[in-house]
Amino acid sequence: MSNARQAGTFQLGDRTVNRMGYGAMQLAGPQVFGPPKDHHAALAVLRAAVEAGVNHIDTSDFYGPHVTNQLIREALHPYADDLVLVTKVGAVRGADASWNPAHSPEQLTRAVHDNLRNLGLDVLEVVNYRAWGTMHAPDDASIEEGFSTLAELQRQGLIRHLGLSNVSAVQVKEAQKIAPVVCVQNHYNLSHRNDEALIAELARQGIAYVPFFPLGGFSPLQSETLSSVAARLHASPLRVALAWLLQRSPNLLLIPGTSSVAHLQENLSASELVITPPLLVELDGLA
Image (cartoon, rainbow, N blue to C red; front, side, top):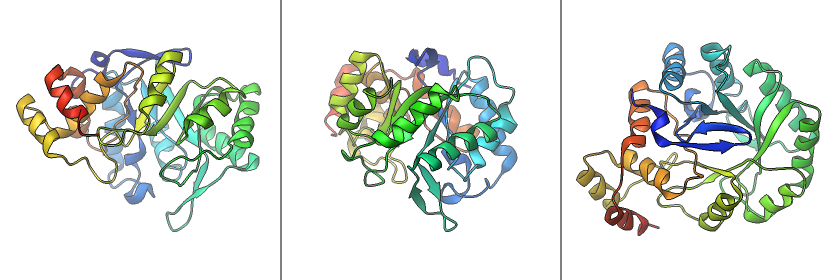
């Protein structure tokens, strides 16, 4: 198994984490709803990730719902001292597997307590406020009420650090007037680069940027250029896409997800892949 430590480290709040992490979303059933197809395989992936040096796991209690957090607790509790679990709140699932906003103070408070219970924790290390926007992309709508609710729960000692997800640069600045922000989790990958300026600004401030859908999400990255570069590097296109992110900016933390130990191994091996400057130029041209 490749070692996640080879990707280097970055600060996440007051914790140092390996830049290659793991996203637990795919451990739930189809459409991120219901239990996994293979319960024991899901536990095996989590344990293999930690054994390979992953110490940053991204999750949420609305994955399943409750499924991924309960799997994490079953597989890894009591947690290693260096393991940082990052969760998010701001959505709920309908009985039809729909995704629905949940931003009222009551809903956010309930979500924090659900995460605490299902993860088996007294304090959540990092909670991301997931703004709704257009569901798949951010807007500039005010997030003051929701983020202030989480800041109050932080003051109560239930949360150590706060982050943001699916937000614009305007919303980041609004949140920072309420409480410190330790990470921003947005849609970003080789072909989706709306956040270039935001990433640079966060890097200047020493704040982590965590790209979700780093491999394209539900529509995997497809590109002749990516395939060509991958062939010359004797690597898979998805491995190259992850390696490109690691080389893009030192404040990027990766959380590729999978429900397979073999695919986990491929993802982690991106830490070992070095893309030469000429090939980086080709990949940069994909935007």
